[in-house]
Every structure is written in structure tokens, then in C-alpha cells.
Image (cartoon, rainbow over all chains, first blue to last red; front, side, top):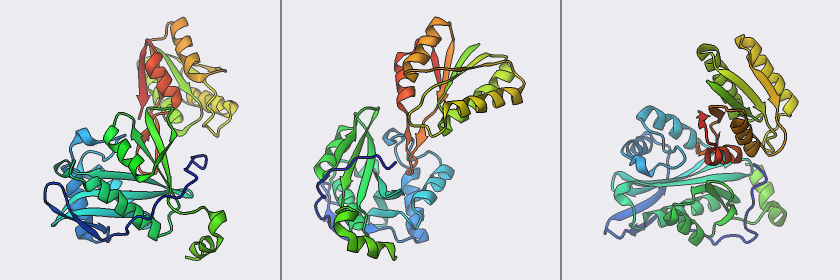
Length: 192
Length: 122
């Protein structure tokens, strides 16, 4: 999908995790990168196993533990970037960047017990900070057009609509300057 | 049942083709396979038609494979209406790297405009 469009302007600098804040329900929330431990993995399985099916979008998260595990195995792979919003030992939310050619597809999930408390804004900023720190240049997502809360969050972050002709809106964000402008860092990334 | 299966060469359209042919063999459906122009497909229409003919032959059923030119969604709806088809079958969408299901523009048009039942094959 190399024909996706992205804004010309590069987005703000986002704070790389770990970050911490108090949500609007007075809960202490910490945003941390996914560490690849079994404990992190199992906490996410548990979050998605109790996820309200009404909050599913375009088929994800899938239902049932088996499908949840298959899906998580794919999006928690080493070439993906994942951050978790922790409330004590529970996952309040999870956001992920999955590679797609020269860009990354973004998705974010906040468990129903933690919605409308400001967790989503901190979580997506943490994910984008994590991506920026790791050299991610372009990010895209799709969102159901009726999901106004999500669309306005993405706009506030700097995403611009790149395709409005189908059921879902497609939006794009430029996290870092493109290859031409930063040839040195592009070469450095290529050596990794 | 009189079934119109629209395929344009995407992976999900081939899935729909195989499932529809398989079902037609069991249910004795009166099946027509319409090979449409899909700009998003990397497979040429002739190759798509060959693939459809092969599926029909393998199943040992009697189904027409027809090349349909022009705007795919509106042509499928028009054919279904003028030739009294009872169902339109299409691919059930593309899955993004994230696992999100996205329905293509052909399926969107058919879903919103067809008077027949529409089946999206997953």
C-alpha cells in the first residue's frame, strides 16, 4: 500500500514512555513499552478476553481466547511497537504499530472500565513517542466514520484524513521527516 | 437458487469463487460467475476468467463464466436486476496488517444498492 497519502508537515515530538499520569477518575496510570515477558503477554490476553464486544472495530479485537492469542502473537512480534497503559497490575489499554511496507498501521484499545478518563490520549502519545524514538516515519489507521470520539482524538494528535470514500476513514500522520530530507538517519536505520 | 458471483482477482474474491462453486455443486445452484474490472487487483481479467473456468471444471458443474466490463458494482447490480438473480456473492474484504477487515468499494456499492440478498464470503 505505497499509495497512501500523508501530511507534508512532520508531527510534534511525542513523549517516549515510560510516562505516568492521574486519570480523570483519580487512578494512577503508567504508560510503558511492552516488554515481551509472559506476564505482559498474559495481562493483555486478560484485557482482551474481558473487552466489551460492542467496542470491537473492523473485526478486532477478535472474540474468544484462542483467536485473541493468535492475533496478539501477530501484533506483538519483534518488528511491531507496542505500549501498554497500566493501572497497578491491570492493563487499562494497549496501542500498537504494525509494519506495513515503509509505514506502520496503528490501532489503540482502551478497556471499557477506563474509557472517557483521558487514557486514550496519553496512550496514543506514548505509542507515537515510542515509534518516533525508534525511527518510525509514517503511520496510518482506519476508523469507522461514526466513531467521532476516536476521529477527534486522531485529529487532535495531527492525523489527517487521506481517504474518505469508504465506510472507514483512512488517516495518516508523518512522525519524522521523509528519507530525502534525512538521508543520514535513513542510512543509519538501514544498518540496524 | 440463481446466484451471481462477482470476482475481480483479489484474494478474497477467489475465496468467494471457490466457496460459491463448492456450494453450487451441492445445492444445484444456477450459477453465473461475473469477471469484473477491479483496479485494486494485480491479476488480469483473462487470468481471473481462466481461474474461474478451472474451478467450474474441477467441480464438474455447469456454470457460465462471463466477462463484465465497466463499473463493477453498478454492472453487478444491473445484471442481477435484469436477469432475475436471487443472490449476489462477493469476497468478504481485505485484512490489513493489523487484522482489521476492510470492505472494498465494489462490495460497498453492491451492499447499498442491490435488491437481492448479498453474501460476503469470509
